[in-house]
Length: 150
Image (cartoon, rainbow, N blue to C red; front, side, top):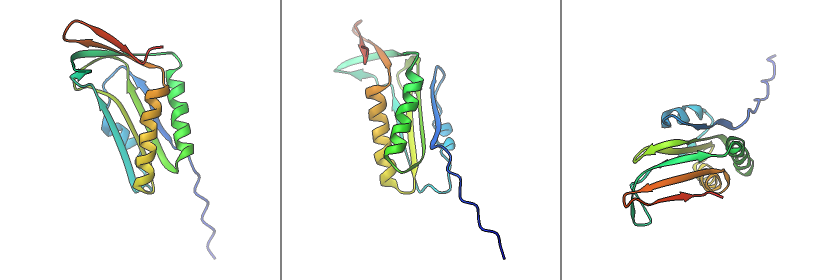
């Protein structure tokens, strides 16, 4: 007679949540979500573009409130609770970024693609709306703009 298989212990779906001053690595985020039980992995990569509001962007700086990492973790936990995800990852860059640099990477895994798509969209949209990270853009015409600041 064989022994019953132990129930699979469910670990936290939060796999990688961080703010970094160094370049972000998409492969690190994908690796953090590696899970044989997940049929879908949805990834969003936000990059610094060369224009905004019809103006040329030279570069930008991201600043974060001291509570930003805790808030990012809270957002990830809420998304995980709202969707049947296996894994959640969110990494945002702070500091000075150039055109083309990766500013944010979010990803989720789940058994099926639809769940992962929905969770990833909610994750990036809620992150942008609620996490106290502010963007200071520098334009080619010499003007500048703060985005998301209180």
